[in-house]
Amino acid sequence: MDISYPPETEAFRSEVKGFLSDALPADWKGIGALDEDAAWAFARDWRRRLATRGYLSLTWPEEYGGRGLSKLHQVVLMEELALAGVPFGLPQDTFGVKMLANTLLRWGTEEQKAHFLPRILSGEDTWCQGYSEPDAGSDLASLRTRAVRDGGGTSRSWGSPRSSEAESGGEWIIDGQKVWTSGAHHSDWIFVLARTNHDAPKHRGISFLLVPLHQPGVEVRPFRMMSGQLHFNEVFFNGARTRADLVVGGVDNGWTVAQSLLGVERGEEAATNPILFKAEVERLVELARLYGKDQDPVIRQRIAWCWSKVEIMRYLGYRILTGWLKGAGPGPESSIAKLYWSEYHTKVTDLAMDIMGLHGQVPVGRPPLRTYRTDDPGAANSSASWSTTYLIARSGTIYAGTSQVQRNILAEKVLGLPREPRV
Image (cartoon, rainbow, N blue to C red; front, side):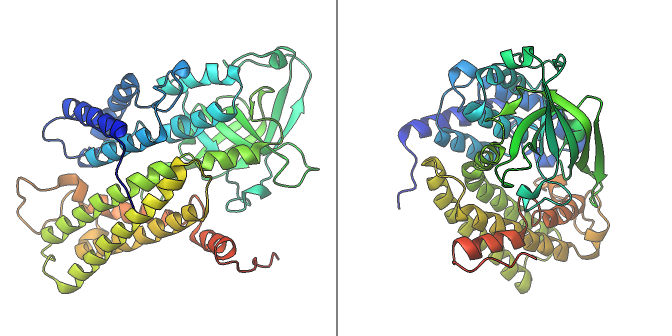
């Protein structure tokens, strides 16, 4: 198996390393070593630098503000950012830059691309994803949010592109509810899956709509997680409206559009997850040293188990990456990877809590058991950081498809077992 990169991408890797060397301070320890305010300030400035350099739009065609490079160049960029401990933009860029922009490049009209892509790149518009519902999470095709076409009157602009269809009037009127909507309280727009044809089979009567959040008829309610953070939201639509031409990929074709969106991050995550989890194991080793547990034979064995799991994750990533670079859609490997890393992450954070003992139950800035050295990992290895990660790791077995759903997919599509009876 040849896992080497071609010369043109290694040349690009040298470019990225040079950029990081010039842009980051010599004593840089990663964004995780900063406190929350400093991390947000850094991330905002860092996003600007990435956009100026063309790294946020690396694979976009040049006519839309991109550099026109390949998926493998994107993987190299993400690898180097992960190794340096710096983010790819701000959290909402996952939905705007990675997900929606690539979806528009494949499915959007010229008017949609010309209007939205520059605003996504500049950060003027921030986006969130309106998929899950209270009764349609893993079985997303059962969604009940509906959109009805109103062809009368003059359509409101919402600052969006105008087409001949919009000029003649017409809007979608949206009613329903979305849940677990990450970052909706910080977003300007939401891309929504809504049922537009109740007579069609459930996978074929769905449309992919672009909807402004700041309007009458939209209510966003944040959830406070058990970690204390505000991240997820409920979004209620009660007669909310969006322009008739802001449907992506054609009316009733939203399921196909949504499926293509799911494949956007597969290659990047396959390349970067092993890097991030390896860095976490290294922090775990340092945590054991800080708490005097590094010679405990049981702790050492459990750390070795974590290290071996990350190595397996790396080779699984190579397999996924190969298919992604060839343009393959999401296959069973993506379910294997999702199940693997999410279940693994609960175990490694269990170990961190066991190392800290009761100190992990009372999050503080630094564990009080030793005199700190000049190379102490700092806030990134505080009990507050590990206890928060411990809580968040549990959600990884639920979002983006629960572990139970991933096992069902693998049982049916890989092992050929019969489908579970539908009650």
